[in-house]
Length: 493
Image (cartoon, rainbow, N blue to C red; front, side, top):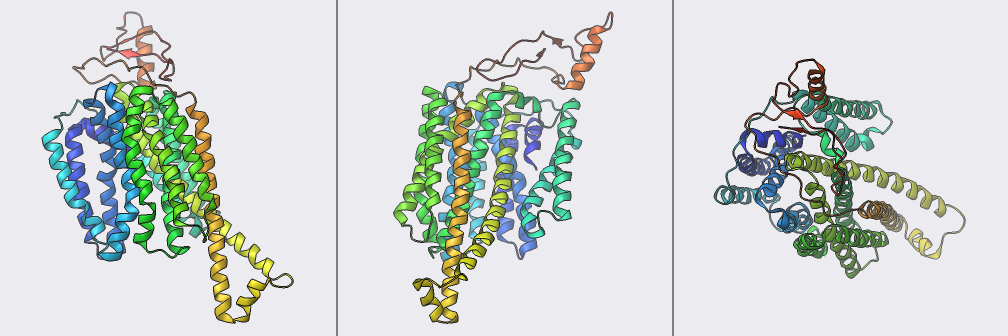
């Protein structure tokens, strides 16, 4: 919910100041989470932690695109990817060790020195980027998108408990969709939108956001269900389950910087195509999950998928952001983060509903088979042992059902990843976007309402065609080209 306002905040107080304040705020909120005394206080402090946590990625990308030359942006984005992809992959290992051998509160306390050191390093290393002349905050747009995202996320997270056809769930879904539709209307009508939706008119960027959202959904699903099955199905401790998926994180850490260098030299198409294909293959292999699988199989499957993800993610994201003019990179980063977080949350909730339905249906089917005719010899041995034997049979049956349900989830993730290969076929390295001349006044509105007012002023006899802002409207130009930008009138100073 706070990601959409990050671009406005960076303009208001400056990107570097917003970055440092977010780092300090995240460290402080993490300390409060570690001090939580019950569930309610933990939820409240986690909400506080999410505010700077949502602003940080947007400010980081904004600063990165201002200080790194475009010919080296691929390598820089590869290093940036270490934080957004590798860190969550390492989480199960570190978290498992802390929970098993130390205190769970250290999961939050460990962020405090890291955040403070990061803020200090930013103070001494990053160049100063002052605030720019800004405009009134778009409260209506913020409230519309905030409630829309909140309602949809709450409905999908509680739908399984309340029932998907229950009135509270339906009301939240419908009202959330209507609120997001209102957001689109507001952003197209106000002079200074919270998120410039014209950014989505650049097909190269929109395509990149779609592919990255699917890849992060696949990573989220794998990172959630695989460690869960390793603990419940194979009986591993949290630490051992984390160590088993650690090679996946190491492969991502190795491939991210390499993929950035490959992008700088060859562009995004081939690393994206090869990476998506390998990622889909590795995720498909995870459909072989079962209680008898070996640790070597788990490592091989996850490392293969990580190799493809590490090769594809950063070139695709970099190509999308590079297709935007510099003044829209901040909006693009905000849209990217919103899309990734919403898709991951909604996708995980949807997969959870699928797992529950599949588990219930498979359990009923297996139970019906056991009631028909003579029992197989292996099942008869459990039955002869009485209640304790039947309980063991039930446990084995539940693990078998759980493995099948999780395999269906991995199959869907692999199919979605494979479908992205079709979108990546036309990827190309965008030409450098035109720079925007320095402004001495506030930027003129670029929304539909402002364009209509300028057009009306242009048609009036004797009226100044530049309007109140002193700009002039140039004729439409076809700028689709390699960047995927749609044709539209350009308002220039």
